[in-house]
Image 1 (tube, rainbow, N blue to C red):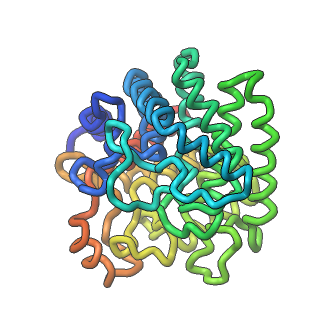
Image 2: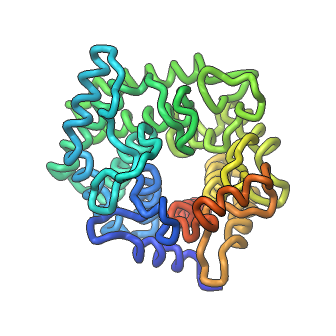
Image 3: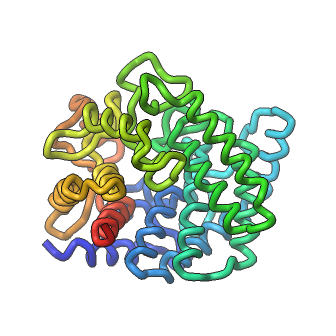
Length: 362
């Protein structure tokens, strides 16, 4: 197998469009778009490995795309102030590589990706010492207002499901984004810290059950929907809570108990049926990233080795693997609908790079 670090960098660069957008997965038709969520993590990974020009190009694309659709964001802010339904007035979660809306129906009202973009842009600025460009400043200002107005509205989660709920993961991404926007905008962003604190209080008041965070708000009665592996993001990297906070420790313990295959990877949540509910490469790397932050380096290396073992002969990492399915009867349904599991998935490669860099710094 090729060196997976260098190969991952090459895969990401090869599939970054001239516009700066990162395609989510080049071989998977419905993923031939650029997501703010995926792209923000990919840009962060590229900053970690010194590919700052690649990250900058993505942030340029993101800002241009936001400003291109600014009228929709403004209408959403106005409707939120009046307490009205948004209708179709909201920013999409994914766009074409040229920044256009996709023509097909998609669960597009998602807020976490914009919070994650603000977080990643701030990381880029801090690492490179760059000043905000005029487009960046305008886009940051607009998205900070957009998230401030809409944060308490139910929306689709990061898995593009369950739009009737609020989600602690999404709220943590918004929290981090508002804090980042405040840092980026300086004196003009002072009010954002107060809104971020409202978001944090809401999560801690409504998003906790039996001493751990829950997948959605209100907390579901079905235990199969109570824990989601993405909840690690509440701490790593969003810092709504610190990685060693007892609430995060208890949540990670539940993730380990319910969603981690011994010696294997990590599932999304127990009721997952997408491609049979396999083990997700990016989530396994993410949990390893968390363990580096709490000093459990041996555990982090275990997760890293598993991720590396999922690369094919070319070094490509998939979205998920199917060795231990939660709903095996549903695998063929998804394969017939959309083809084989997405591979390479750029977000998987990015999370691998993030874990590698975290271990190098530990």
